[in-house]
Length: 474
Image (cartoon, rainbow, N blue to C red; front, side, top):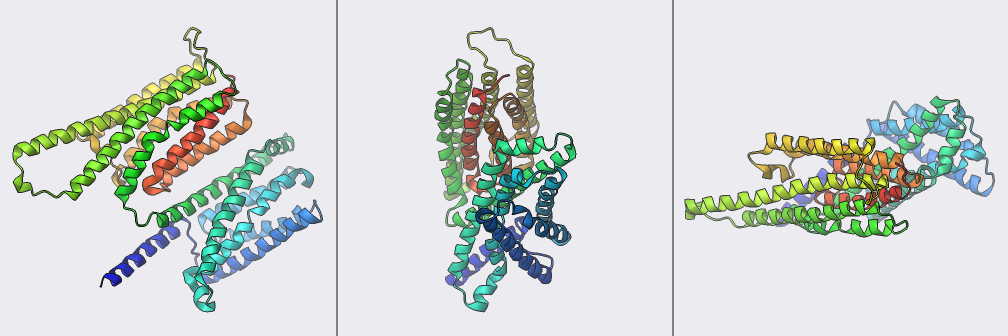
């Protein structure tokens, strides 16, 4: 009986994962016939593009245009039959193809952009094999060892990251030559410039989204065997200390060009590190306390009314302490962001404290948005503030509104820092980090450990903010 129940549970978990795949990544198509031809054409196209890459690298460095007609007609004719996210992929691909013609860019000047895009099709081979083995049909039909397809999934994951993200990002997105070439040939063709950049950044955004879904599917499998409460408590314990690493990161970065204005950002990071520690430590204590209450089921008849009242007062004090640490943490976030902007403006610590228009607007946004957050919390959670701090589906709206109130002034500060920095690469990296932060917070890729991933990205954000600040002219 126990084995049957375990088997049913495993099947249920597998069905949940499959359902999530279908809802998010959705490997299913409208009909088996369409799916068959899409897989076949996709495999053929990947073969053509791969052969073109080898031909270009070994024989003719002007041959990358050879694959364009195949790609163009495939994207065009497959548009009516594919799902929405693949339609976007085909649209961005068409933008990339047509922009070369619209701007009349010579192939020699466009090769360094085309080659990384062509290489993204290498991961399609492993995807096609994955689709062909849907429901283990190849394993059952040809007695292929399942480990072969486990290896295929691993290669698909690695090749997707390597070619569609890492190489694409490094060879195109943060490559100054990309923007030089496109801007050079689009001086009198704004439409062509828009089409080119739409294709370039659209593919990056879409591939990042797909990779996040793959990571979410993978982490859901890896976290089996661990209870949600255990992961939440472990996450909060780690989060109590992670932000302190930002002090080391910023100190290391600012050491390249010591300046008295760097002290502002260092003070902001240190302050936020302290209050982040206090908040996440209180959050961990609350999770431990709630877990102990769930484990210890006391007979309510044996408790006196006075004991119940004293216990209620104790819990209220604990909740108030956690809520106060929550507010201080949010205030410290605003404080750190504003001080980072002062560092960007090379605000001399020994000079009179006079703010320019951009800094005054930042101070206005931080002050008013924090007050709005307090008002929102007061009118919605004045009776029970602990509800605000407990993750639940009902809290998604509240979390979204509070995240908007907190992130809006920070995004403004980041835009000012990026727009006034001479470090082009750091600015592009900072924009992408903010995009990934939004993606992780929205999709909750790592479930109970999602906030830890958020803190890791904050470390990357800190590094690129400091790099921008070192070459800022506000």
